[in-house]
Image (cartoon, rainbow, N blue to C red):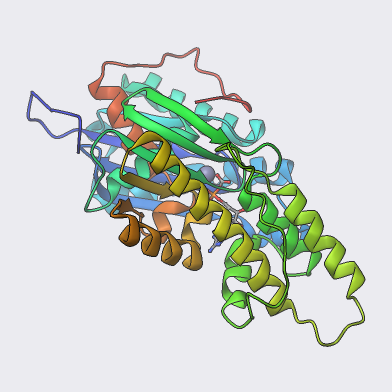
Length: 342
Ligand code: KG4
Ligand code: ZN
């Protein structure tokens, strides 16, 4: 792993826990970058009929799943609680009831076994997901985190040295995906199904706006979402318009903006290393278009495999390892925070 020297040369095992939203996840990671297990129990079946996450149902499901998921992670890694050097838990941002389950569980393990506790910001986890890949970026690098709750561009100078270069002024990209999917009756989460339908549609069939916000690295997706809503209302009875074309045209607009923003950030900072992560980084068109841009501009691009882009606990353990090696610890006063800037 770049930027960290393990002077003791001993293996460190971290149990990562993430219950920030609608997935219960636990992972065992060795030395911050070697995944021994990474279990994700999805709640999408519970929430899909509501077209979005119902927070109370999410917390209840975490309560039921947390222990089985942690046990499975330990079992697959062939480790026991006594083999752990630390427990890294996501304590925000996220749904407060959901975070509370993971935090209370992590604290009780650490207290009962006298293990170190590491509180990790969810966004820091997404950033360090790129370290879990075979090729990890050296510092400094740019990180585009695009998920259901967040969309930001960061300059990462080293551990705990993060500068936010731009952020969404309204909706997160994933949120826009989920809302467009709801308008089209496609269920929740919207990203994967829109990604799939887009392959069958024509991306140049509808001219949706590109919110570039010139001179800024901020993002904005609510206008684009409204444009899609207006288009759907106006064309309700138009049989010539297909959901596939709407999806493809919406997705093209999103991807055009994200790629352009990344290009601007590279130009502005002179940093030619870019990592993308978060659930929307699982998007096939975004991955392809970023790759083309990176080749054209001679930029090193780091894109984690899809299962490490969406929420998972291995990324929390990876960021936790940075805390551990930099002497940062949490204690039993660690409390979850729904709002937690990086
Ligand atoms: O990172 P993540 O798993 O959870 C949050 O931290 O929010 O991101 C979830 C978001 C959802 O909005 C989902 O629709 C979106 O990521 N997503 C995608 C794709 N897969 C998941 N968006 C576009 N294309 C995808 N293939
Ligand atoms: Zn996330």
